[in-house]
Amino acid sequence: MKIVKTVSEIREIIKEWRKAGYSIGLVPTMGYLHAGHGSLIKQSVKNNDKTVVSVFVNPTQFGPNEDLEKYPRDIKRDSELVQSLGGDIIFNPEPEEMYKKNNATTVKVEVLSQKLCGVTRPIHFAGVCQVVSKLFNIVTPDNAYFGLKDFQQYVIINKMVEDLNFPVKINPCAIVREESGLALSSRNVYLTDEERKSALSLNQSLRYAKSLISSGEKRASFIIDEITKIINNVPYSKIDYVKIVDIDTLDDIDTVENRYAVLLAVYIGKTRLIDNFAELS
Ligand code: AMP
Image (cartoon, rainbow, N blue to C red; front, side, top):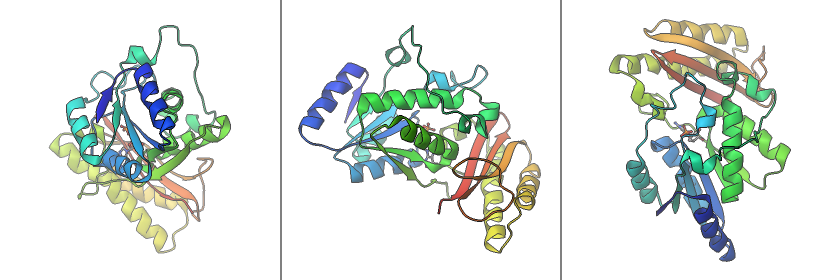
């Protein structure tokens, strides 16, 4: 396993891999890897000859008052995990390597990027699409792996790939949770012990919503109210949004039938957490 810092070096390696006829999987991450990232890496290693894990805290997807500076980083631990899972390369460029001073090109998936998380994070998805397009052009993967934990991101990346004809297959990966039900996230390290207890309300409310839907409840507004009550009932919580949407348009729906997602964004103290469950068929 090798850590590569420059675009030119990774391009050389990819050229050799292509000559040898290898298939390539890409797992884009911001590092501080956990078992959620690990499940994406495992799928890539299983289904491709070579796996590149990018570790890059992308400045263009952070708003001015967000946590870019304090976002956790530990490349040594990340490389141990990637090595142990059979990944071949960590691509870990510095921001100056990815973005030249006169960078002028952005990639914006209209409409979908303005909904849900896009309301409080208006530039976020343009930054994500910009860096993911660059990674696709640099690594030229056959397969790329994205977690359903970031459900809106998954929908937007699919749209971008379709609209811009990127020759890559996007593979969705299930949400990995702690035994407590809390979805794994690099940002969980920000939580105090007390906040962590409150954070369990996200998954608890989603599980309750799932049980309501399984027993025949179809009214989105009723389900949203029940979720809201559970989350508002714990200390330190402040809801950003609770939504039930169509999975293609991300528009709100009134009646829960098929192809829907129940999505939450909640501040626990100062930490903004997201979680969801989706019915993709
Ligand atoms: P991040 O490092 O947070 O940008 O995440 C990199 C990739 O890992 C994204 O595709 C995420 O959706 C995915 N991911 C993060 N947390 C989880 C999780 N708990 N389960 C599954 N995938 C995850």
